[in-house]
Image (tube, rainbow, N blue to C red):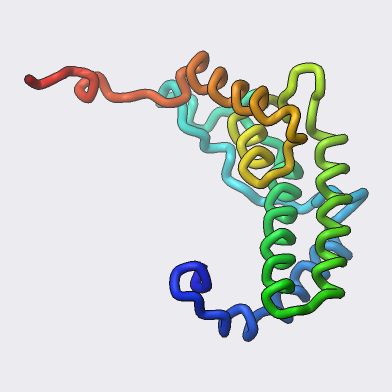
Length: 169
C-alpha cells in the first residue's frame, strides 16, 4: 500500500470515492444476508501432496468461494473504514463499521463450527483468512490456528524436495 510505504495520502484521496462506489456495487448486487455470493478465486490449486493432486476436485481440498469472497470483502471494508478515518469521513466510518460487524456475524454463523473450532471444510485457506483478517471470535483464535497447523502437518501440505533435507556438511 502506497500510504504505508511512503505516507502519501493522495492516492487514497484520489480513489476513495471510486473504491466506495465499488463496495456499494458489490453490496447491492452480490451481498445476500451479508454473505458475498460472487466468487472467482484460484484456491483450486492448493499446494499438493503429490503432483497428481494439482487439479484435484476433492471437495475437502477446495475452499468455498463464498467464504473467500466474504472474507476479502470484510478485509476491504476494514481498509475503507481506516481510509474514512484518515479522511475524517465520520459517517462512512460508522457505515463501514456497522456493515463489517454484520458481515462478521453472518460469516461466523454460516462458516464457523463452534464444536470443532474450524471454518467450513477445514481447508487451510478456510481457517487462515478469517484468522488473519480478524474475523475469528477471540476465544477461538488459538484453536483455529491449531487446526491450520494440524492440517499442514498431518496432511503434509508443505513438502520439501529430498535434496533440501540432506545436510551437506
